[in-house]
Image 1 (cartoon, rainbow, N blue to C red):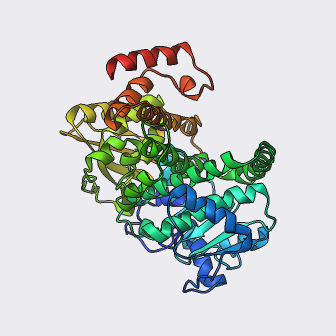
Image 2 (image 1 turned 135 degrees about the vertical axis):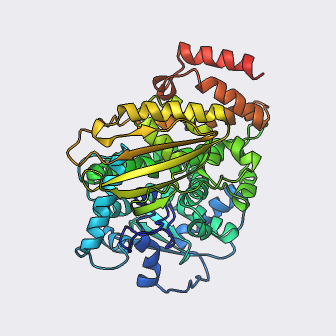
Length: 488
């Protein structure tokens, strides 16, 4: 994973202001790693000081990363092997933990209320603590493009640590050619997340390629080691709301599938070099990662005017297609959620303090779709989502106004039964499967456009159970046959 100090920190500054979509910033452990990249300036030198040579423990790994990516490191970088306590200290910014201010705590509570208004959280979880848990227990290492250093949890060079370093050294290589600080400098959180998905997907691809080079014994040792680490992390992440983990995981799952699609070639040999053009001109929205047709078209996200209710604003920004997909997929058929958000062209929202009855957070949003038919499809999906929300949320969707659909939803309260399904994580299988199927079609000789047509034709006939199946099913066989007829 990567970290930078340009992400919005946990709520704390005065309002009203644009917090660059705090909802998703809070969801990513990197967003809450405001101190993680800062750690380089607290623990190490503020100005990068490159070593003359690689640490002997990582020389072979650096060579592998170069060979796999077809790029040569311009200079070595420092790799710091830290004990768990040292790593935790770095992820917290090297500052001893203390009680957050009352303003921080109130903003955290208001952010939780905003999640409840969007049907993604229940009760009163501590988002400040959840964010730090994800940054610490939820990660094994991170590369800081601000300080050009890799910080690793672990001092013993196990096979698991080797795999982790293959991932992190890929980030170091990316940074030397494509400047990863642009992630933090992106004009919107949605664009920042889109770039991050490609960057993480590239690193996961390199990581997997390295695993493939391991002996069977080393692979077994790796899977045992990572399995134990995941079990330990799962226990520590138990109190972190599912939606935060799902949104963070989407960078890796969907990003890796996007990279696989872009690296696919007709000769069955993936070409990592094809991704270099994408990294040089990265997607500008999560919609372009979910559906590469949008990236190929090159249409920038539409600028959508922020709703103005007249109430005191808590924050305002844009959701992005990825967040809206997760929001919808938590409550409605994930395939319908994907089809509804495929038409996304832009959005904006405001979260306000509504005092009509009692003071509570309400969200007013406008979503721009590609066509009237897309607007109708999104309206039907958001209406179904609204019907499943607690009645106290007073959720409502406006009829389409041309290609625009508006909706409103309010916090039903910490005691409300939110009826969370927990299916949003599995629902990511739809965009992932679509990209993987398309990659397979490219390998089989299809153009990228035809491959995406074929992939869409396949998944639109499949249930979530089919998508998650480990083996072919009659439904899958039928879908493939129909897709071959629809997109020869």
